[in-house]
Image 1 (cartoon, rainbow, N blue to C red):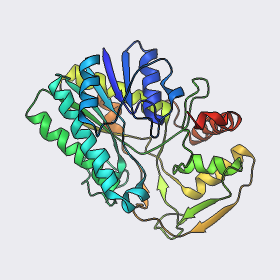
Image 2: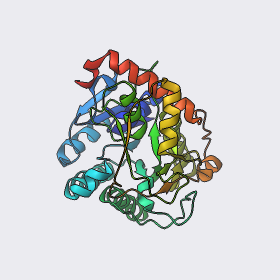
Image 3: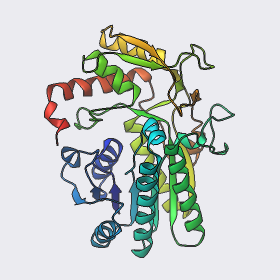
Image 4: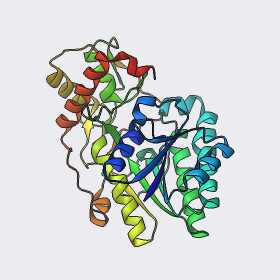
Length: 331
């Protein structure tokens, strides 16, 4: 089976590509390298291009002739989306429309979309199931929900079958595969905490301690990149075998507060890095925890790396590897 991966030089896309290669899929990666890295491509077939340029994506898909598309290319920073919503709607929505149109023109039947728990906004029910009403509270979540709705509408009037994965907070890495997050200005909490432990950033700022949670800080469901990546393959197999479209949460069903993550990271790194308390950020819901029972029930997905200590330990090994190989940030 031939899989076309957008954003395959980035954190999540590159690891999905790695698993697909190891499971004997034929893959190609499409990326503009704005937030990705050439080293993450490994030996994959590569098309340099931008989804906002329709002809570039059309030519790449026509040349590769994939059976399925996995779409990871997107801007993902919540606070940035609040400050610059146009950027998010142009890239995340218009880029996805171009990709979907190119897929239809080239008769690509299967489409896996990287979505987010941000589509739920501030959910009424915790843990959150796929049936929860979607009411995003930031342009990032809104842009992802728009693409979900586009896929739903187009699938009703065409041959296209989609699998939408709404994932929660992705973390961890695979040092043996030499793959992990390598962003100079990360927003992910675990990455920032470990950079603080290494002295790469001066301190960790907690954005608000007055949320309606057990310790006043936001609670999130963290999922290991290895489990998340496998979920994409399992969902693709499901929609192919069942010949139907569906939506799945991807998480572990257990939440950790910002303070808890900081405390666990200090134990693992054995470094008492500085922590400061700041104001709330715009667009942050107090609690997001996944109900992923549907994914487990309908596919073969079973989490293997679902201990928070494992996630942070693997991320710590990766951050130390990056620290000793600083040129990886440059290409």
